[in-house]
Length: 203
Image (cartoon, rainbow, N blue to C red; front, side, top):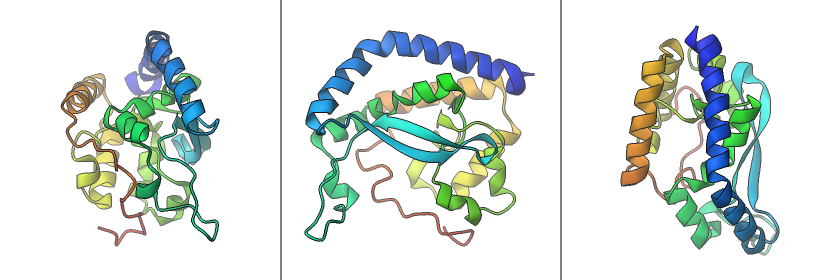
């Protein structure tokens, strides 16, 4: 009952409330990043959601679009901006995803949405991570984040899918708040220098 009804009701109610409460911060960052990122305050990217249905994830833009002499984007670690480092460290870059939650594309708690190119690389067990809506934070994020291997992340994601409950979600929320406040496992280079998933033999 919780996973099929109450979880979505909580997601909608809490995301709506948080958007209202955080609206001054969201507005300020949108205006600030609009001017500092040449009119591009948001980063959007297609990600697979529940049942592998694609949606457009939205975050505050933390990297510029500088290119090398050949016209290719510079490496990620060279494009992150000073304000980008700050919003990553404070997790403020995640705020716009509350709108994804409000729309029903994401949940507050669930496996993090990854890239569509990874879909063909999952084995049958790993594919189970798409049986629920992806989340802003999740079981893997409070149990190592980028300090663990891809296979371990997927193992934790599937465990969450098989064990969704109100108490588990509350535990994840508490651990997430603790990690954000202590800045534990959170850094300005998250997902920047991380090796891409290349298949089931990837560590």
